[in-house]
Image (cartoon, rainbow, N blue to C red):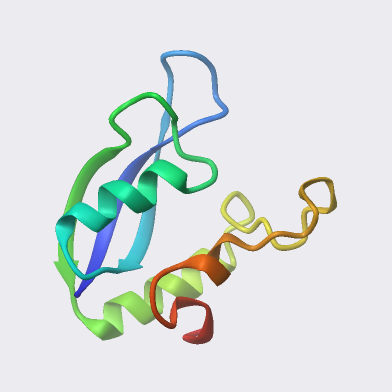
Length: 98
């Protein structure tokens, strides 16, 4: 199942957040909460999920391409963090789709 999740993004101050859209491939809706809890740039200690809706595979692939070009979400080239890419650890073939 493919979903578009609207999450609370962090690193903007205590009690403040920005809305961040992520595209995920999941088995059940509970997986969205588990993934959001460990996802970088998402508010910790808060209910991170604002909304979630099921989408088509084409919408998912288009969303993953947008994510790859978003400098806020792209942690691959961040040398301070060791060049880690979160998308490599996503469920299924999310890193291979783009």
